[in-house]
Image (cartoon, rainbow over all chains, first blue to last red; front, side, top):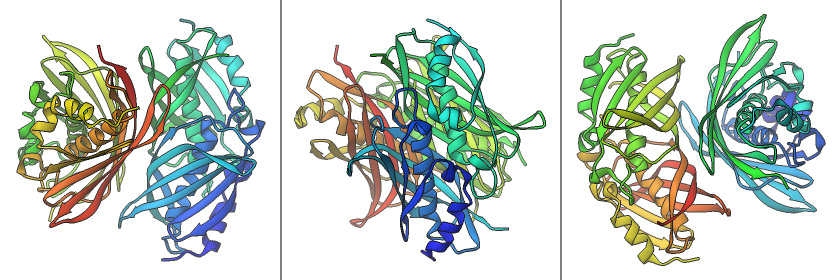
Amino acid sequence: MSKDRTHIEKSFIAQGLMLTLGAQIERVEEGSVILSAPLSDRVSQQHGAAHAGLTFALGDSAAGYSALTLMGSDTEVMTVEMKINLLSPAFGDRLVATGKVEKAGKRLLVVTARVEAETDGQRKLVAIMQGTMIPVPLS
Amino acid sequence: MSKDRTHIEKSFIAQGLMLTLGAQIERVEEGSVILSAPLSDRVSQQHGAAHAGLTFALGDSAAGYSALTLMGSDTEVMTVEMKINLLSPAFGDRLVATGKVEKAGKRLLVVTARVEAETDGQRKLVAIMQGTMIPVPLS
Amino acid sequence: MSKDRTHIEKSFIAQGLMLTLGAQIERVEEGSVILSAPLSDRVSQQHGAAHAGLTFALGDSAAGYSALTLMGSDTEVMTVEMKINLLSPAFGDRLVATGKVEKAGKRLLVVTARVEAETDGQRKLVAIMQGTMIPVPLS
Amino acid sequence: MSKDRTHIEKSFIAQGLMLTLGAQIERVEEGSVILSAPLSDRVSQQHGAAHAGLTFALGDSAAGYSALTLMGSDTEVMTVEMKINLLSPAFGDRLVATGKVEKAGKRLLVVTARVEAETDGQRKLVAIMQGTMIPVPLS
């Protein structure tokens, strides 16, 4: 097992969408990763709140990287499936997504994520997610 | 009921994320909307395939606009929850997402979406989605 | 690959819950299985409609056996995850669940199920399901 | 709001499936309900573990009754949708499902459940669930 941040960062900077969304890594622990992304007109839905697509993308990535902290450097993970429940419209300065590995099985990992919207340092839970990741050997 | 494309387009162009992702409306029918988005380094994951966040965002929007075709012009819809199963890595020129209303209830709408990756005009199914939309009166 | 009905039946009759619920196999095709179960007070929720647990159990089993039709006789399948959207209360004489394999991958199978409630031969769609099955070698 | 256990029990004993499965109420708090059900051949899948249908039925009911603790006695709740991830095969003496309301909105409630299998008093997490409940006025 490895919680080597380098492995996570190397993968993260190769994700064009994370760059496009302005996302960054906030924290890396064994089995848990926190990501954030700024809120702006570039990622909104029609009412100015964050688009569900942004909330999903950030939470899915936080969950995936949480799984990756338990893999060796010769392994990647991919999303098998993911479900999101949206609790409140996501208004504020930025989104913060906390991923967590709930169960690391031999063949699959079950993960969750909680996404909060932050305004002036105050956070409000806006989405919860639950899904499955699969290890993929790096070729 | 209304399948007035103007209602859909007005909402769509107000979605900053759809613009950021280069998405466009391909087709609007009563209860079904097709959207597309180009694939590029800007929306990739670490292996060059489309990020699950893009696939989700496009499918979720196609499903949401499918629901919106059944609403009057004084109503919007929001995603309550959505689940995605990723079937294959999404490589190609663009993604095409087809949304569909499975059940239009009084209080909620159940929707599905199928997302395909297109390469030289050939399409391959890359994701299926199933979720719930809720009507929201425009203020 | 095998669509040998014997393989399915052998597994089915070993499922205590299917017996308890009075479920039976209606049809077995390659990649699709149809199951049914009678509706009664024994499987109701508090308003007399079928409990979501029954609807889920039947649809999940139909989906799982659909996956099993693509496996050899030395392999079983287990549910990794499953999501159900309930469209209408399930009143009637019996439930009929149609499972289908959407994608048979090497490591996982993506499946769907549609569950209908039947009254005097008339069927009404009451639930749609989407999930993941994993092959497990029989020991 | 009401955490009146009578309201919960009255609904529970009207659920035929809960009786068929031998389920019982372990604990009722505001926003959280714990249910249990014995494991036996009557609710097994083909390998003797609890059928996913039982695990789902118990967790779904625990989640639903958690929502009901926040409703007045003139209101019921119904499952809109529910997703289950199965973490481990459920072997043991009984299942214990803990439901929790994550967000009580005006129109919908987002709920989760954790289901454990208990053997000689030792518990092991076997499933996590995430879903949506909707209040329904009692007629």
